[in-house]
Length: 158
Image 1: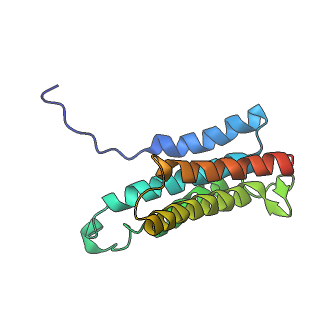
Image 2: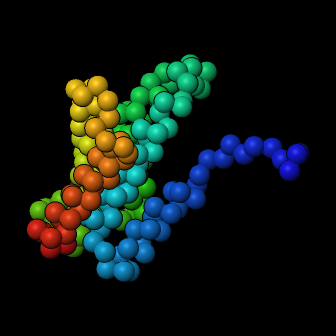
Image 3: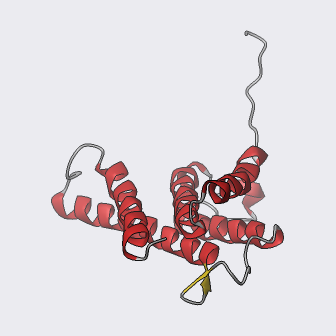
């Protein structure tokens, strides 16, 4: 263990897992829109966690704004949508809700739910001067994604 070097690995397994997770969810009968909400929420959570860890001078100073959590969230959203597009999971005629592809719609809804929950938490914390309750930073985003998921599942019968 003394001579073990730290691994600074990229996670190509994560990329495959997203696609595989969507395929498994389809086989289990879980609607694409609901799964997409959670995939997008995970992307936003990863971006909000990762962005502060990226130094401003990353990549030799050529990319100065990669440590912006909002921009990184949008980049992850775009790359996820590109992945689904290239694997022909977006664009199926029978996979639409209200005229929009369910995967695309779910990705946008998940993104907005997480972004609004994160901003709500920051707003409330700033107004109170402290966090409203223990683990509120986790409860706000997770609660919002759960509420959105249940709303689509129950009210729209997905």
